[in-house]
Image (cartoon, rainbow, N blue to C red; front, side, top):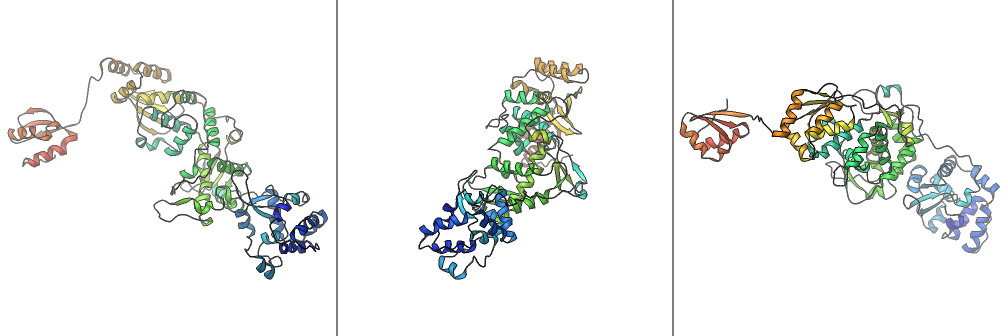
Length: 541
């Protein structure tokens, strides 16, 4: 921090005399150059300093304690919101109105005693304007009682924890599903939502920062193999470690209901670390109220995300709206919403926090560390996570039922051979079809690989007819096809002849007799339109 010389340099003689008067120091000096060392020498008197501190109003003492509790400094925007700002006035107005005798805020009380300074400091993570205690005064303040940092928020009431949503490891199952879909080149928009508990964008981002997906959205086979074959505890820790250190994941951009414009950067990794630091200082053995935590952060650590001019320079608006959310007035919708999102989304998905709500359909109202949290905080794999020891079931019709706690590596491979058919009661269903098997062959897989895989993980003997069908398909290709068709009947052969000469002829599968034809069900409307152009209205029965 700057010292007293740096803090008082640049001020006029009248300002120095105001400070001397507040300290009871006689300052008879002709100019600033003579006055400054005399004033600083007088201020650096421990006994006098104690007298000045003891005479301060309570709020000014509180401000000084908070600065000391934060290494002697606070961002000016945060400090001034709690303790007031300094009125801007020139020397003539100052000497006329004497704000030192009638201070408008605790900040002015400290300012006109040189107990604080105000300056731009080049400190991590970025330069900004700070309120600070001059360095050489800090050395004289060892006996000033420093209050502990306030506990942010309050415990949750029993009514707020009526319905508990325990932390879980479903993120590992979602990761397996997404990786399998990407490996099979499934279009992201076609992912079935019922099988995922985490939105696609955050899930994809987490897998990318963990090195499982490259920038083109393709899986990295060697990394994926190691991820799927390790224990669930080690896999979860890998995602947690990647998330904590990532500078590319941007939780702010995941907030629902907001739109973001412009090229500004919100530095997600330092913000994430500040949130983790605040959370780590909370009691770890009880439910904590989410809204009260947010309100306390707004009061004491409001600039955890944005500072000073960033409240006006970030272009954010409500989804579908036209007005930008500007200034500190938008804190709840942006900074506060992000704080709640951290707790209820990534920190819940990654196993740090249990959540609770007053009723099953109410939003989360409370949070507490999960049983896995102590290990995750210390970058260790949590104990007592479930084992992947469940076996799969294979039906004669090609349906494969995979419990959630079957080995992820096995489900990943099954998903490359089969089509997703649903998720219900903690069980994934896949269906073997000629199309899905042909797609697997194009990826370099063989049906024998599938048979070996199913035999290894199946709870019973594979249906012999299914094994034979897979072998026949590989050797002879598709030997039977089914297609939905319709029967078209007309009253005269020439009608059917005219239809055969129209653009609708491609929808005719075959003729049964001069007045009857089989047409594809998918072309029914086109055939009906062609008949209408020929002067015949067809009735669908």
